[in-house]
Structure formats: C-alpha cells, structure tokens
Image 1 (cartoon, rainbow, N blue to C red):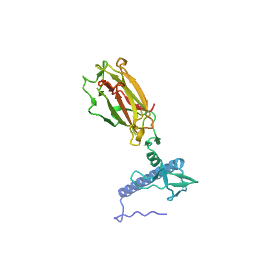
Image 2 (spheres, rainbow, N blue to C red; image 1 turned 120 degrees about the vertical axis):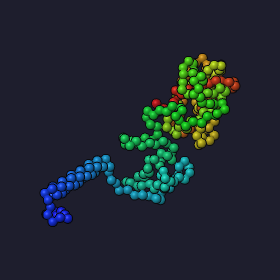
Image 3 (cartoon, rainbow, N blue to C red; image 1 turned 90 degrees about the vertical axis):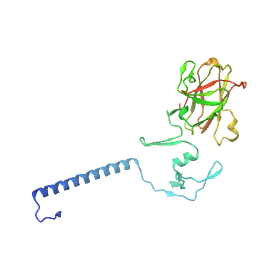
Image 4 (cartoon, one colour; image 1 turned 45 degrees about the horizontal axis):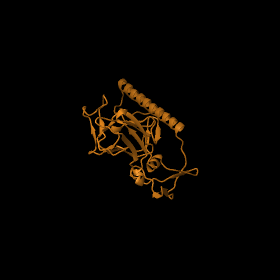
Length: 258
C-alpha cells in the first residue's frame, strides 16, 4: 500500500523530502513508545488486578451498635454494598470510619493501614491537646523548664492540680509520660488516666490506670495503655488533696505503638 504525503508544492526538493521522512520516523518512534508503555501498563494490571463480575445491592440496610446506619463516602454520598460470590462487600474506609478505627493509605506500598501504624510515634506537644489554663500551663521559659538539673524545651506545669486531655484518634497503644515533682513540692502526686471520649458516658469518671511519683523519685517514666481510646484525660493531683504539688510533665513524653 502506497502512502501519499500532501505538499503545497508540485515538486519537492531533496531537503523537503528528507524533513518529511524525519518527521514520519519521529512519529513512528513516538507511536511505538506509547504502544510499549500501554502494553507494560496492561501487563502490570493483568498481573495485579483481576476483574470480577459483581452486583450492587441497594436493598441491604445496616444497624451499627443498635442504631440504623447508612454507609457514606467522604463526600457524604451513600455507598451501596456489592455482592460477589455470595459475600457482601463495603469499602474498607467506610467501615473503618464507622467503627472509629484509624485508616491510612500509603501509595508507596501500596499498603492500607487499619488501626495503629507500626512504629509510629508522636511527642505529646505534637498531639492535639486541651489544658486547664488556670491550674495547668505550658511554658518554654528556660528558668522554668530546667527540671532536676536537666534543661527541657517545653513542659506542662501543674502547681496545684489539673487535667490534660489528648485527642489521639485511636492511633496509639501507649502513652509514655515522663514527669517529676520539683521544689517546693513535698507530697506524692498521682497521674490518673481516664477515657475522655464523647462516647464514654458514665465510664468517663472511671480510672483506667494510675501511677504515683514522689519528690525524691526525680524524673519518672510512667507507661499508660491507651489502645482503642480516641481521647484520653490525665488528671494530676495529690492523693491527700494537698493544695500545692509542683508537678511537671516533660516534653520527652510521647505516644507510640510499641
């Protein structure tokens, strides 16, 4: 089959013909490159993605923890389950968020993390925090952040008693709290863990875990189990309700998944 190339001149000069041939060759190379890329992408997809025949079922209703629940995506659009080989499926993100389980997609893997991410760690000042600005304050003042001879960048001061609330979003298993009682504090101090979630209801006042430190202990490490808790409260006070305790929570404290 002969290919006809149109030209606005009746007789093409040798230079013009050569330029046309170069353009044609370049076009063919680009076409081959595109075809190769498409073939590689198709081969990858064929090896890792398998097509299935499934059906949406819009008649199924859901009850979550005793209440009617409608699965929706991030934009608020209703999500219908699909039926495949007798099993009902919903997007993993829809279910994780309904069950208050953190979820994260890592495209590099690709990996979907459901729940705690192994090895993740965050300092307490990097986690959303609520403090009582009357009895609990945060400071970076070098004269106040030197605790038992060591200088810290930032601390929480609790001179009488108070609460610190952290919103963890169920992302961590442990709270590693480093604290101390400083001069002129002379009494034991209790650090109590509570569930501060809006869903805690009457269990919000139940102490989940408690640690006690003394002035002579110096800097002390306390480990609290916070797995599955969306929001936690640390209440700090003297067990004998002594008015002044001079407790310090240090910036070396952190949440992790060890």
